[in-house]
Image (cartoon, rainbow, N blue to C red; front, side):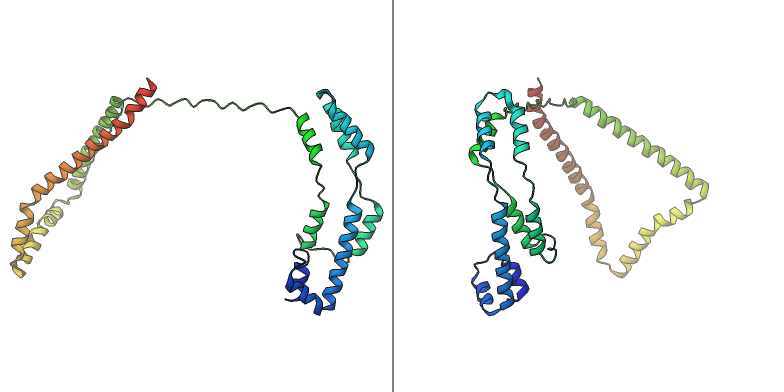
Length: 254
């Protein structure tokens, strides 16, 4: 353990065995520890300010009175409990501290802990008894939002589908006019005959491919019907789930 670590740990855990062993062998760290001990003793002796007997008696008298003297108690507590730092204590601190402490150093934390003066529990209880209770917070009830009817949703879906179909038909007409104007019919016909030419080349190179292609053509229509059945089943299942969810909500709104 080096000297810098020792000077940091001495403010946090001064009874550490490793720390004490290092202090026995290092004169500089021992002098630093004694210096900090004297500083701690001076701070504890100077910062302990007992409450004056007159202030204590006045606070007890005010606490035992009726609740109409809240303002007087507040003013008395603010005026009497404010303690200014003595000038001689400031001079001693400036002489004892040679260099400014770094931000949030262990010495700074120790000073912060020493400067915190806890109020007596009896005085805290009496002050809390003088403060009136806060009014309870009233939370407004949540108003359920009405959902649209099922026929309204179905109508919106139907109108949307009709608009999409009309848009596709209109786009198809525009596409046909553009093809006729640009003269792309020959090019499209060549592209349409390209799959047949590729299949002929495949049949010439691999005669067994004809059987595979014919099998795929035979099962094409059953696969299409199977896909349609799956889509219909998904739509029916979704509508049933939506109806089961809207059932309790409709009863609640009713």
